[in-house]
Image (cartoon, rainbow, N blue to C red):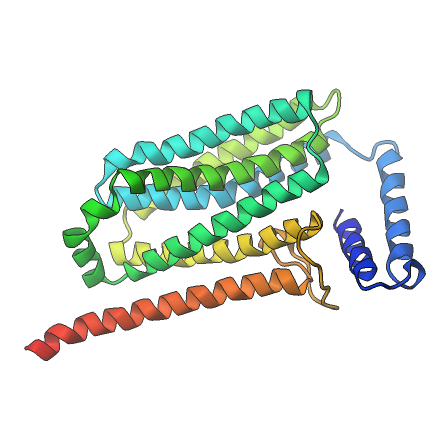
Length: 314
């Protein structure tokens, strides 16, 4: 699949550049597609073990991205001693699962999800989540100083976690989880064939069990972290996820044909990190990283200024 997508990207870039088919990726694309067709038709190409591992790793990979964000929000609210807002976060990810179940029914029984609409949904969802995570990451980093956290608790906590902000957390939990659920549905629909339902279900349940164990461990040990260390680590984690989602979002929109595609020869392709060999995807990740670095530096300057002001007054 990776080779087919790479060859297709090269072919589309060549067409956009006005090069004749024979001089671009038409040949490699045909040979790669033919190889994929032969493998798909070969007997025994898909065993129970490969189906189980596919279902397990797909859900584990997609679930981890959503889990990290949701756990960070839950741990934050617990440390902030605002348990009344937790139902909004739980409501967000539960609503995303319900919406995902409805999407599965629609996609498998009523209509088919085309490649373009699939990539558009994934791309816009990833970019929206990346924008939100950038703001959340910078905000969390700003609270990683003990003095800043105390000032925030004293002056702003009531306003920051108002009903409007609680619904913001609901929306963030929904967007992050639904995007991963949607992507998982697409992969599972491709894996699903008559007779392998039990194997896919076993792989999915195994992944759910492992994700539950990871969530339990993260929630338990996050309580023991000092508040400043917790915010510092959480901001770095969320910043990394924002960079990954920025690359994934642009990559998906490029596959849908909405964003131009400029290939970079020799650049790596690591889809689970959102790294694609195009100038646009890598540029989006670089821009996201620069915004985060600027925000983190601004937080440090603000923290130094706030500490220097009382000292100067004395």
